[in-house]
Length: 627
Image (tube, rainbow, N blue to C red; front, side):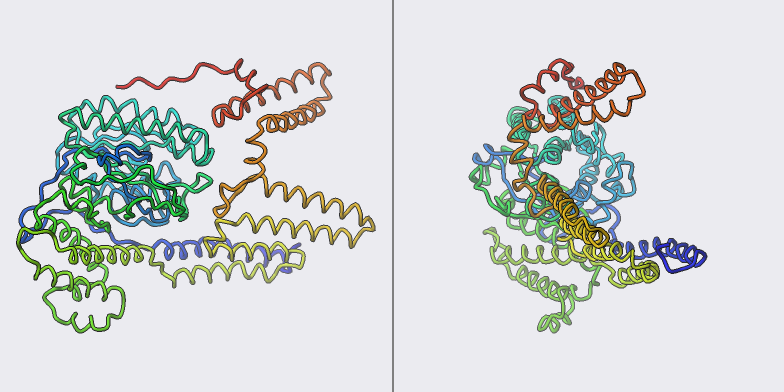
């Protein structure tokens, strides 16, 4: 037995540990996923001294989630930004941030994996989709990733969702969206059209950002943008439409996402319309490569919500933490209109701030804050002092028809940014007391087992404890493969030392150790993993992909080995039958391997493997006809 306890005591102890473990997980989770209050209901325009809300320059929205754009930027018909997407960079949390303007939590990462989940619905929350529906200016239509349908049940009047988890498909999953576009561009009964393309993301997951499929897919997306923009120019009901082209997240050098590397947190955000030419913004495109992916003005992805509110004429969603993008202020020539756009955005965020910290120090009618502003004690007090200074400056601003005071504009933009940062940090305000209690309960349960373990279990327990310690640093989690590389080498070394202590065959033991270490090193270099070195050269990229004939030689050797093993296992059958059965199984598997590779990476199916594929390949599937 591996423990010093008796069987009865061990059974009792294991029962207690199995009870304490889920208790520890629950306590820890309640601290790691703290409750975040949500303001209920839809936002309404409040009465301001600056008059009614400014007129909206757009009446229709095409919201396209994908990336790729060049020509329209140079002509001034497209205004690009780099949108910072806070971690976690996965689809469901990012759609929540885009539509509500709020900051998602890591709990959304778990819910993102459950295709049947409906607990994270935004149907009862204030979003720009809910505001567009409340305007009753037209129907809401969605085609693409069915995450939108889970988040907004009953919101869309027409929809055709596709699952995002069939990552090997990056053709039909996009054709299912594109087949609806021409029909919808002819329809004039909608006010919001959401298009969420998945193909480019799937290519990244399967083959990385440098895949041979990537450029053709980007050209395909360019063509979709061109078709929509052409409709804006040539169809009367599309003349005041605004198109927003964006990515919900980016990807790293390996084509993955979810963490916080620059490639993952810097997706594109582009506003497109012929009306944007009045802004006189002719930016270079394509932009020169930058390591941090900040190609144009950097904004928060959550800034979309208040900006769309101003451009389309609806109140800023109640739980928004985004700031209106000031580049669009020239759309309104009246200074009072510009002021109230910013003031309405600031007061909306102030409602969330005061719900968290109280309203007393932000009350403009009190004088107690002036004394506190001489020496603010924390970020909330500093924010309150800035709020008073911004409002004081607004009171003395000239009421004439001149331009907006750039000093006040900078101060207001700074306040919005600081409020955004403060409330964003509150969204990850973990309950450290619960975290420590959860850890203590877990240690109490597992520690009693550890201290009762016999010496033979010490290496396993050491590896377990060291691995657990690694989980407290995200950088170690992202590069955990190195832990297992070194742990495996140490384990092989310990086995060799133990073997040499009990045998005189030192040379064979050392030879076996060298062979095992060589095989481990070969496995390490086969594919780059983790975040830090993702995309760097490895054996597959350097030798296999560059030499498909070498790949198929290795594959053929593997299948020949399997053929020999299967045939040997069937030696009880007649030799001819055993050979025929083994050959049938191996040829079936081999042709499937070729067919799958042809779909996933057709550039690898060349030479001899292409011949059996040509014989077995069926006709290409066609997209279903439009409605």
